[in-house]
Length: 225
Image 1 (cartoon, rainbow, N blue to C red):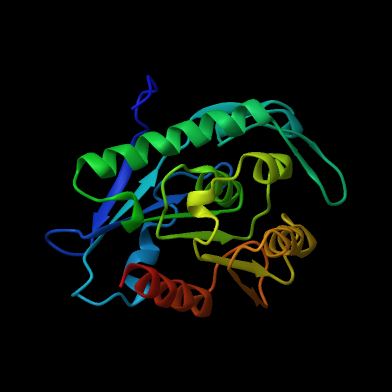
Image 2 (image 1 turned 90 degrees about the vertical axis):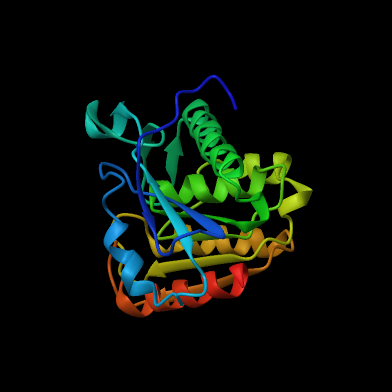
């Protein structure tokens, strides 16, 4: 493990002895409690006990929000009509924090190939980046209502170990926060790089919906079977 202090987390285990883990990263300004209620809605079988880890991001000032301090995975310096200009150093720091959480799951007996990285919005941007750069193969990546925060990193530093790791990407067609075009750009870039990615859209804004949650549950069962 690195010298980072482990992030505080909300944890839910769906059975007595978990055989897999899902590390799920919340969006800007939320915290680890945000997606905990989703777990019972995923429809997971008792035969697949999973530990869900919902970390709380560090607090930091967000430049594009007038320096307002909130939980965040990286600073957003500014955004224009479509692009988000992410602080690259902050993205790299959060990738390190996620690697520490993966290492802790390894110490608790869950091999990396039995771990899924998931995230929503800014958390999804880190799930994409941490997952595609991770040196050991993960079971899967779930990227919800999100984008590639530093596309250059994916193109220059992506790991061969996760070159064929399945990705579930979902996005609302009426998202006013992270425009659909940003999600589509990530999907297109990964497809061009030969990455297996299933792309889903839903008639919603910047949120998740029950059909999406059901499909995430099916994806988790498939990659963790």
